[in-house]
Image (tube, rainbow, N blue to C red; front, top):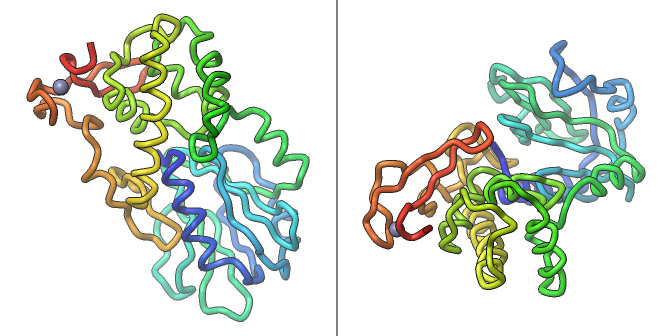
Length: 273
Ligand SMILES: [Zn+2]
């Protein structure tokens, strides 16, 4: 599932293809995405010129004519890419949008259909942003204390709190496990029980693992690709995610996997006591 670094990579790569381009003809599949999409409103974006692609947490925004125009959430398996109009059409392609005066088109592919691409205006964008906690990519040191208070204000396990987008935006299953390993914190401990020193390790650890992933164009372990259709290489850099049964890189103890809130967590039982 694409997390903050993957969505930010998609935004960066899509911007290269889309900024300055005008939207042309829209085609969509009859299948329902995460919710009903207002395709007639999407169609009215024809001829508008895209001027920015950005992300916040796991949400991607495209603006046209200096105003928010589109919002995209990739859900579990969404891929938003620009490719040649003649490129083979993958199964589960739900949206194709030609670009004017170009042989390329924007495509949305999503086998699980938990994602969406829909119209967006300033008000909708604010509603989306208001539901999200701070994004580690834009977090300032002066915001650390408020974020720590928000995380500590929970009786849940620290790993589960980190997945809560209202607390911190963009952290998902990969980077929650990776950050807790880097900060040497047992993912099963209650968020409220962590010490101030542990939080002083955890917040920079979250930022570090996400910045590294962004530098590596994201972690492709299922079907994630960037806006050009390329896989990221960060899977070569993860320390614990999906490594159960392999020796910890620090102490050689075998990494274990536990289930928390229905999701797998990977950690070293010795380094993260
Ligand atoms: Zn270890």
